[in-house]
Length: 389
Ligand code: NAD
Ligand code: MG
Image (cartoon, rainbow, N blue to C red; front, side):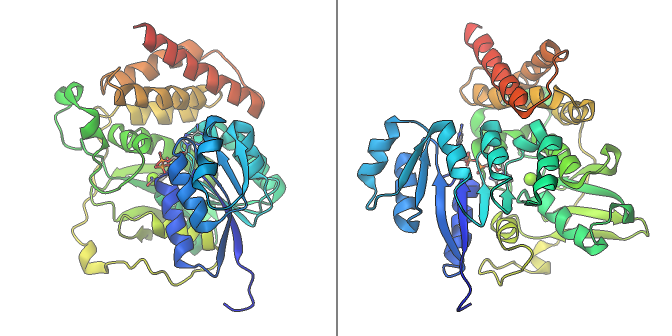
């Protein structure tokens, strides 16, 4: 594409699963993307290696003690930002596009800061929409920001909706698929013996640890229903979930005139990441699909809502609105590492969230600052409570 200026890109959470796959997309199109800003959190050496390869002008690290380490391992001299304020500074760096690949509501201040400044945001993070979806979507509309989902189901819905000109009146409902995770079909009476290693072993996707555990509990699908509600302004009873163990159909929409439009593909996040980064164009990808015959043998089931009570609890919190989805998400963000560290059992993650929801149900939030404050308070509460047990 001689003569066309490359798209300048920032990636928040560049050292993670989505972040490194976004780098694969940039590597696939070296003349068409230019990486200008990146953030990591604790992996200083990984971040230094990425910076040396792509030479972004600005790099953010999680804490001040990492600055000397990263400088020592870098062979050039970018601006280095530190901590939460550093992330916000990075998010407002002049650029055409920002990929948000941080896990958790830690991304919220940066997303809010980026919306007025960056014209195109590829959003992988779902927790910020769960905690602050209506406010974020209102900001996106007010600033005319292009917010493209990276999450595979939402990318799939987004691509299907193009077939009905994004007119929601033309669809009856949308369906998000769930793999069912590693414990689909396992006797729920044995759930308390589940180990972190088992929960991290996702059958189809290779992902970060938090979303892997969320997939094992089906919290992930609950968060995704809330994400879809906000992204597509879709009524709760028009968003359905089916278990599809092969993870080939990522989502479908059923039109009012009886068609089922499904989006299919091998479970590989590089496709939805590339789509979100190149939208509204489609660029010839080097990541090749297997073709239909390799994708056969598809099965679809109703979710087991008794074995995985997190799913309905999350959706119920989404529907209730107010502080409920914020508290659900914050409690879950702490419950997952507690489980991974052996401090609570698999089902203990559910009990932890339930108890904390009761404690905060009467609270209210108005602004995004209120949401950030409540999110931190809930996380501290869950952490302290469990360190005392
Ligand atoms: P990951 O754990 O692999 O990477 C997370 C990134 O966020 C890392 O770069 C880490 O340094 C950074 N980070 C972590 N805590 C931070 C903090 N407090 N402040 C700043 N940065 C911090 O996670 P992932 O699997 O890449 O997931 C990222 C997001 O994308 C999540 O919201 C997840 O739900 C969503 N997502 C992931 C996948 C996937 O396949 N991995 C698919 C769909 C959606
Ligand atoms: Mg998903």
